[in-house]
Length: 146
Image (cartoon, rainbow, N blue to C red; front, side, top):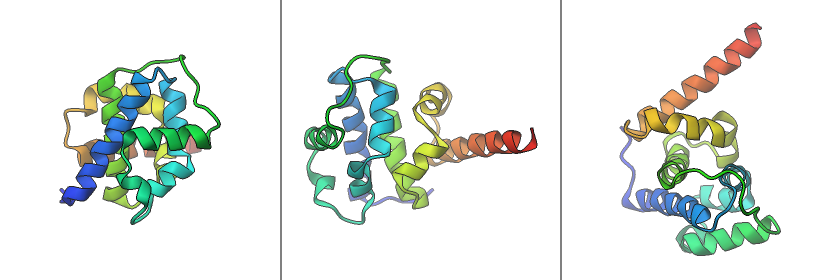
């Protein structure tokens, strides 16, 4: 298991809380996740250092809302647990592999994360990430073979 610094673990927690905040704001959860993971806002969090990393989840949500010219309300809702785990896991994934948010989302989109939460949320986060990568590779293999 990779030992993350306290600061990186805190950033994972901030992103988890950001995803929870999106739920509390009654945003469409899958659309929020897709918008965030493909945004300039997420790219700023992927940087080695960006002021946004320590701005807090409320400010980050405002930045994303401005970037997207408004985030869609209502729609599909995920549980608070799924939202936190998804946000936390995505940020951890960046630190674990060095991949950017946009790349991570291509491997495990919102639907995949919500479907895998029940079986994966109790696993060590690195094991969950490795399993998510394996699912993606299996899907790619099946598409290639068929």
